Length: 101
Image (cartoon, rainbow, N blue to C red; front, side, top):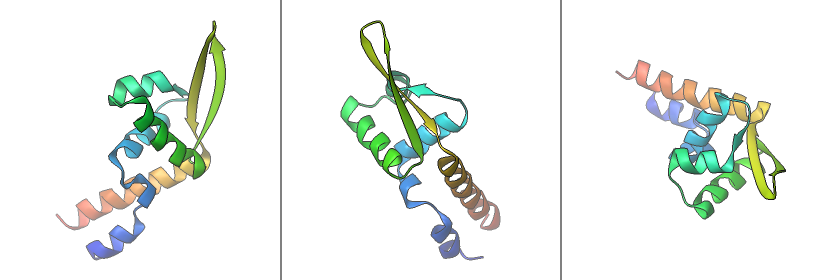
């Protein structure tokens, strides 16, 4: 299979290293809160929020809002669609490396 065919199997939404990292964290756990993402990825609030919004619009993640004391806590988890899309993307990357080495 040519590299071009593998490229066509990649998920354009996951081309972003930030969104790929977000999805990697989410598939490895249940819920991740906004502050944890920010600390793990070293991003500004606005930058992180923008990436999470794109994933939410694509139905790859869902969010819940709650409170800890008086502070709002926003957490995210991967949806089944998000998990399948992530797995397909990672498999395409692995196949591309394996078959073109």
